[in-house]
Amino acid sequence: MLETTIAGSLPKPSWLAEPRRLWAPWRLDGEALAEGKRDATILALKEQEDAGIDIVSDGEQARQHFVHGFLVEIDGVDFQRRVTIGIRNDRYRAEVPTVTGPLRRRRSAHAFEASIARAHTDRRLKFTLPGPMTIVDTIADTHYRDRVALAMAFAELLNEEARELAAIGIDVIQFDEPAFNVYGEAAADWGIAALHRAIEGLSCTTAVHICYGYGIQANIDWKQSLGGEWRQYEAIFPALARSRIDQVSVECANSRVPAELLGLLAGKDVLVGAIDVASDRVEAPEEVAGTIERALRFVPAERLYPCTNCGMAPMGRAVASDKLKALAAGAALVRGDRTAIRRDGRASGAA
Image (cartoon, rainbow, N blue to C red):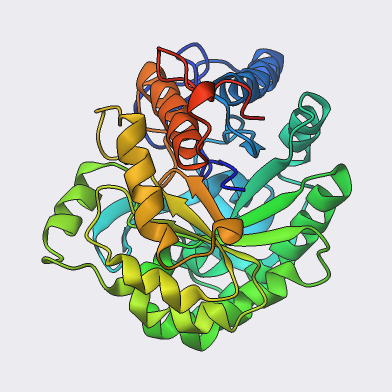
């Protein structure tokens, strides 16, 4: 009960990629890069286990970006034709590749790091993939010229990838859909249908992550413009409650999301973001416990999984590590397992 997990990414070691950056360039190449990705993946698992995280992740150590890491193995996506577009409803601008032809997967994008992760942990293992709507919002397109058709084409390829990951032994496959929080009506109209295509035939647990974005300045500024209550989830939660997705991962820590909105997800597991990824301040375990306890008013304990708000890729590694310890310690407090809290705030025996 109240098993902890993370939303997805962790900071990469400075010897692998430039720290505290999204789309950070690699600092290795060739065989050294492959070896570095392998080592960083194992290290990410070890850091989560040491912190007391129950359901661990590869930390997205082998990809530059949560979307583009998948796209690099897709025929029809031209990384030589990069253009700058506004994404997340023009919240910020990003340089993205262009869809120039029919989409086809050349090979698995993530079997390499998934296999390494599965071989190096006995804990339940979670793996993240970009959601179809969010891919469509993070790429240019001169071929399909129809967002729904493009999303469905990507959903088919994501399903191929997800089936291979499940066969490797991944326990939870999560699709990251921050775009759902921006295009609520479209998400309910066709975004969930694309997710259903992506999860078709999967026997593992499926999840969708919907947040307010990485802790970068553009997202922080956007949040400040949203007023006293953030009710974006209200537009999509009822449709998600009716969906075939098993789990929904949401942002709750240091946010203005009304806790009662979690009640709209009745029947789903809820991954409650109890760690703020937009601040370097490390939460006290009691703060984490407070966020969990507020959520427990609307989510049954057996369906609540304490989590991070979003990926932690742009953070410093030491801060991220301390926040993971705080997450595990806060969950232990709520479980009443105060004897598991060490003096340094770290949870012990929280496997």
